[in-house]
Image (cartoon, rainbow, N blue to C red):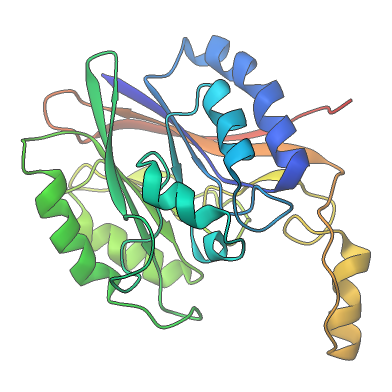
Amino acid sequence: MTRVLFVGDVVGRPGREALARALPTLRDRWEGFDFIVINCENAAAGKGMTGKIMEEFLELGVDGMTSGNHIWDKNTSYPILEEDSRLIRPANYPRGCPGAGRTILLRNGKRLGLLNLQGRVFMPPLDCPFRVADEELKELQADGNLPILVDFHAEATSEKKALALYLDGRVGALIGTHTHVQTADEQILSGGTAFLTDAGMTGGHSGVIGVKADSVLPRYLTGMPSRFEVCEDEVRLNGVVIDFHEDTGLARGIQRISMPVELS
C-alpha cells in the first residue's frame, strides 16, 4: 500500500504555520505517509511561491508541490519551476511556459506520479485538460503501473467530476483545488479512482476564502480594486489521505481532513 497526504491550497503565513504544526499530529494519527503533496500556489502572501518558502516546505518533509493560475503572480516562481521538478504547474498551459505539468516522486523505493491540470470553465482559456491528460498519462505510465495523483485546479464542480469520470480507472486519484472550500463528496469511483471535488484550503477560514473580509468587501460594494490581506483567524488544515494499491496503482481508501490548528 502507498499512503499519500494531499493538503489543499496553503494560503500565506497562516497556512504555512498550520502545515508545520499539524504534520506531526497527522503523521502520528496515520502512522506515517509515504508521500506528502501540497498545493502551494497561494503560499507567498496569498499569491505565488518563493525559493525560501519552498525550502520551508521541503524541511517539513513535503515531497511534491502542485499549483494553479496564481503560480504566475510572482516571477520568483519561474526559476523554481524550471530548476526543481518537485514543483509543477498545470500541464495544459501553452508550450514555452516555465516548468512542467507532471513529475514522478521517489521515496523509500516507492513511486508516485503527480499530474497538475487546470480547468477552463470560468477560468482563463487554456488547452483542453482532457486531451492533455491523455498525453501526460502516456508519459507517466511508460514504465508500468504506479499510483498517479491528479490535482485538477478548477472552478466548476461539473468539470471536476467530468474529468474524474473520464480518467476513472486510469489514475489512482483526482483531487480538486482552487475554490478553497472543502467539499464532502469523497468517493472511490467504479473504476477505482478516488475523487474529491475540492480539498479545501489550509489557512484562515474566518474571512473570504483565505482573505480578510474587510479587505474584500470594498471590492463588492464599490466595484473598485482593493488590496487583499491574508486572513489569520480560525486557521484550519484541509486535505485528504489516499491509500493506493501497490499492484494496480488504484485507490483502496480516501478520507477527508479538516483540522483546526492553534497558532501562537
